[in-house]
Image (tube, rainbow, N blue to C red; front, top):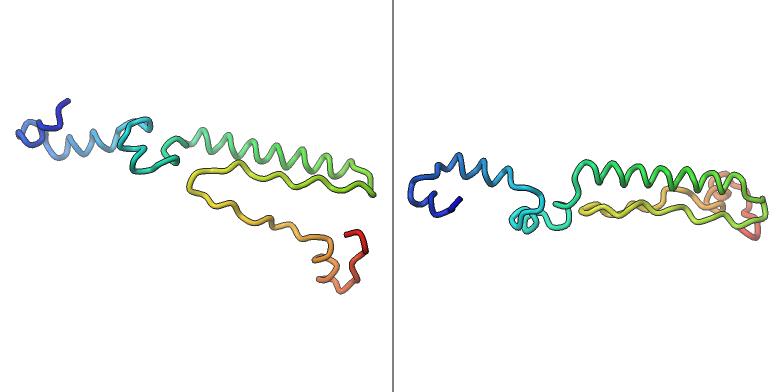
Amino acid sequence: MDLLDYHRGRLSPRRLRVLIRHLPRESALVRALHGEAAEWGLTEHLLAGAVDELAVGNWLFVTANSGEQADPPPRPRPVPRPGVEPEPDPAATPAEIAAFFGAPARGGD
């Protein structure tokens, strides 16, 4: 396909628009317009979500089965996704929970 056919009158504007809209994710134009996000489709986002949920499940299992005196393992970070800024950890620290309920925080927390 020659893009000069558009200027020669052999390629309609509608046909050109359809061709551009249906370019594959690997095309140079799509990568130039969308950057790294062009490489992430529905499958990649679903897999990243599954990995995140599995990591949280494993973290909860290890945390629940650790000794009371053991330091808790760090909460897993989500898989970075293009175009999405990581959200801050919503979990409160033991000191924040104690302050909320008006109880003094324990020394080691």
